[in-house]
Amino acid sequence: MKLYNTLTRQKETFVPLEKGRVKIYACGPTVYNYIHIGNGRPICVFDVLRRYLEYRGYLVTFVQNFTDVDDKIIRKANEEGVSPEEIANRYIMEYEIDAKGLGVREATIHPKATETMPEIIALVKELEDKGYAYAVEGNVYFRSRKFEGYGKLSHQPLEELEAGARIDVADQKEDGLDFALWKSAKPGEPSWDSPWGKGRPGWHIECSAMVRKHLGNSIDIHCGGQDLIFPHHENEIAQSECCTGEHYVRYWIHNGYINVDNKKMSKSAGNFFTIRDVAEKYGYEPIKFLYLQAHYRSPINYSFEILEQCKAALDRLYSCRDNLDFSMKNHGEKDGSEQEFYSLLEQRRGQFVAAMDDDLNTADGLAALFDLVRDCNTYFSVTRSLSAAQAAVALFDEICSVMGILYNRKAPQSLDAEIEGLIEERQQARKAKNFARADEIRDQLAARGIRLEDTPQGVKWHQD
Image (cartoon, rainbow, N blue to C red; front, side):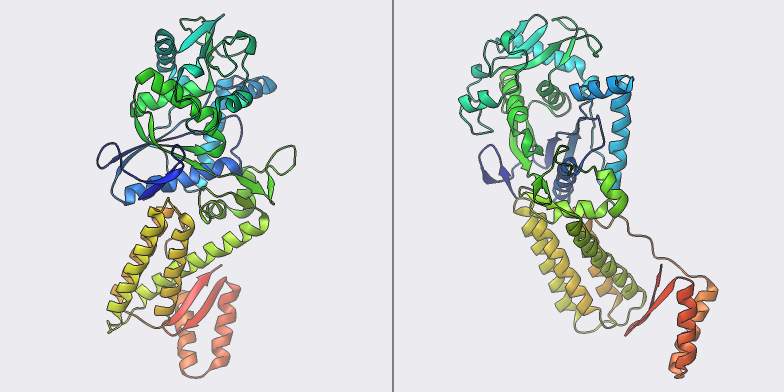
């Protein structure tokens, strides 16, 4: 498997630090509101990365944090007259609803910044003791230029990074490029006791502390949105490597941006959509399909028309899977075509693995799945054996499980005896060429929400 490493700007063969095990850290949401469609992309994409690594036999520890202390959370709490903790807990629960709707698995660990405070303070103190950090009136700043590798992730000269850096009480800093590790307490804000007085952590130090606490000094993969490369991930590298003296992350993985109707999404432009808003109209799964139909590093465009296309594509997958169920139920005997079909299934499996091995190319992975759909629709257009249908189902479900789609599939339904009797009566009427009675029964069943489809293998029914 090859992954594109932002650090080296090239695809590299994936080799974990420990054979058979993979440690992944994904930057999670700042919980002050519902997640928007831009937030949803890394959540879905890196869930697929985890699923695929497990599919390839790795034991994966997947850590995704919640930033539950932040300026935005405090501002929202003040607006509503509640505590920051209440805001954070509320939107963690809302996040969990959306993540479940998107078919995203829970992380192995979901740490919170507020639950990592001893480790954060200890990390800041170590950096201060080693001369990489300095305190000014209760604030603690990191000396960015003291770390020789600063800028290696974003690949920009220090002068350009300084111009784009966040300014936190700039007149206190020794250098404009320095960034806050610890912020002194302000009235009305949550704070914790520390060697520098009451305060709260800077944004970047939280993730370094959580990685170290739950995964150790060095990890295999760190992932997040492209917007996090600088300053967040750049600063994580600096503070972590200066503290431990070890290489922090082997592979840095970043997903591309989302545009809305070919324009950058922003509240001011009026094209800002939450996952919840879109899901209420289209459901969650078409949103997830939207993320996966393009390569994760490519920018993607969101529009209602594209979501409709995603919904139609999913309908085709669901229809194929239902047809395979029908083929298993209405199977025939083995014939000489099976070995050739089994070879075709193996070809599709190889096609899927090759796509996903090439930097998690979900777009080509889905192409392999739709090629499989075409193959199955053609092969099972006539009655085939049970073993052939079972083999097709196994591969179909295997691929869908890795991609994390078709999770809304309902168990095959059964009909009551009366309706089963009517369907059988219609079949007998057709055999007797009593088409008037057959049509009458079809209309009668349609009025009860049962649609019939006559196929070479027998009659299929669908319930509205």
